Structures are given as structure tokens and as C-alpha cells.
Image (tube, rainbow, N blue to C red; front, side):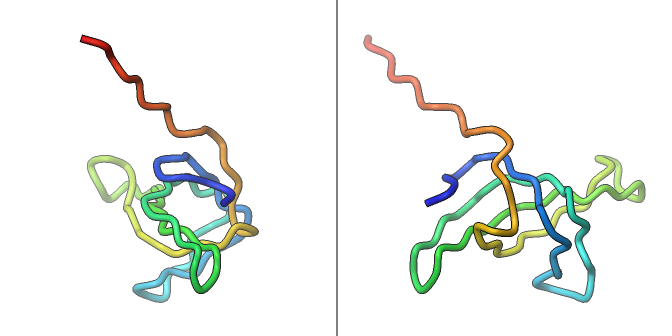
Length: 84
């Protein structure tokens, strides 16, 4: 698997929205929220799309991406186990 849950990613290509006709531009940042191995390696990704109409400055969309459509820009933090 190329990525794991919570890895931060950047799209390498324009991506079609799964729930509308919006084209999400190359370079959009997001985070992996689910990983799939079957039937193909794929990832559910929450993308943060710049949009000044929202207080946060972003609109968010969840899409399915394949490994050739994104790059990992930072790995998810590793869980720290404490000993009590």
C-alpha cells in the first residue's frame, strides 16, 4: 500500500468530483481516511478545496483516488504507547 490512514496527500492530477460535476484541481491537499485493497488499491480521501465563500476558507469533498493520482507529503504520526 502506498499510503495509510491520516497520511497527508497532494493530488498529482485534476480529479473529478464523485458527487457532482466539479473538477478538483491538481495540487489540492487532503488526508487519507480509508484504504482499500480489493478490487483495486484505492484510497478514500478528504480533500480541502480552497473556497472563500466558507468561513474556514475551504470546501471539503471525499473522493476515491488511486496510487498514481496523488503523492504522500507527510506521514501520519505514529501512535505513542505510554507505560503507566
